[in-house]
Amino acid sequence: MTVPVSNTSPLTNLAAIGQFDLLRQLYGGLLIPEVVWAELNAGGRAWPGRDEVAAADWIRRRAAVNRPLVLALRERLDPGEAETIALAVECSPPFVLMDEQEGRRTAQRLGLKTVGVVGVLIEAKAPGLIAEVGPLLERLRQEAGFYLSDRVIHEARAFCDE
Image (cartoon, rainbow, N blue to C red; front, side, top):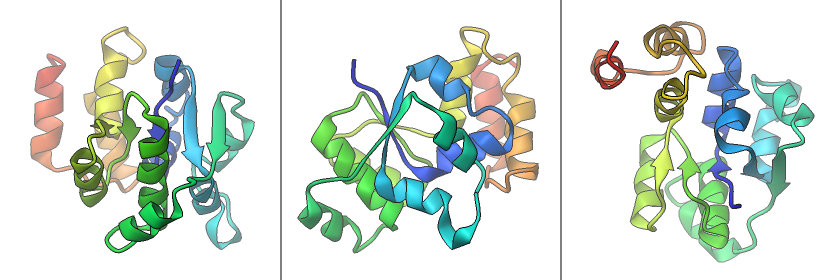
């Protein structure tokens, strides 16, 4: 079974609202680039999600091998996004977990499906892993500082019949 490749943002934001384990429940495992692990430890501090990733035996870390692709992607993307996309190109996962708009566009241009943290929450509602999407989206905005427009929250809630 292939597992999604994740960038930093879904890990930190889900951890910040206490929903990190949804990733294990939904996908069984994740693959993250080594640079994502480095971002979770940047500045000598443990960012949200760092301890969860460290304790998760269902998350594997691996460096992207195609360095020319990483360097090309770094022209427009941050290190985590570039390495995540390069690793995904190498591994052909079912999708890439990524929130940043430019990273998502780039991944999609390379034929990769993307899912963001809002999509994870919507997916978690269907099997009853969470009761409601709306309150968690508000917590993302308020507690995690995650930018979500009112329109996105409204559309996600409407999609989930909330």
